[in-house]
Length: 278
Image 1 (cartoon, helix red, strand yellow):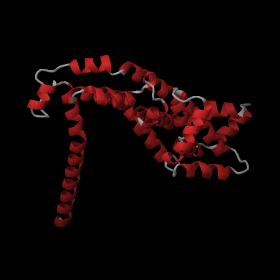
Image 2 (spheres, one colour):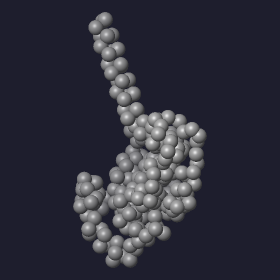
Image 3 (cartoon, one colour):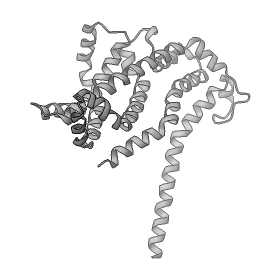
Image 4 (tube, one colour):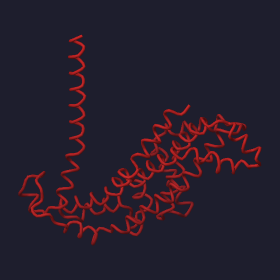
């Protein structure tokens, strides 16, 4: 009994140690960036990196907002997020509803193709996709990355289908008896019941779009179409100091952090709801 208790204590101590180490690995670089953003270049070069700024200075942030194209990047990022998640939620949930509720020829083939596409790295089709975007005439517009974000997000279809599969068919039958069309069943019965999944997927998709640098940089190279991430990348060469670059990093990081802090309960509740549905 005593050996068992000792082994449990050692195991718990090891777990806590690993947790503390991982937390420090994540938080120390972030803390370094935040502190550096309030310092002058002289303070960074002369003082300890994790020391508090003395005094705190907002000059770096003023400089970034003045010369970093921040407002344009924020506007374009928000437009991309809103447009992408609105269309993506509607299309993904409707496709999942069709795959879950209707029987038709080649249904299993379609679902297999949807599932198989998640295994293919996106960069493999990049050359072909670039040509398609050019032929559509939407290169260097907000539509280019928006179309890519919408058309390549197969995971949402899979997640929605898992939720809809757990909803009893009796609800559909009751709605049909009341005279509802298939679309009305989807909109009035099915969609409200998959809101936990919708909330979770909206948040995760928003974070993906906000943090993506490759797609906007490749398909929207002009300064007028810069997003927060491409603004940061372009600002790296013009910042001139680690202090100003740190301020730019904090500005780019803030929307994602704020979104997570506000909606973290929704993320957890959506994941748990999907795990315990019967």
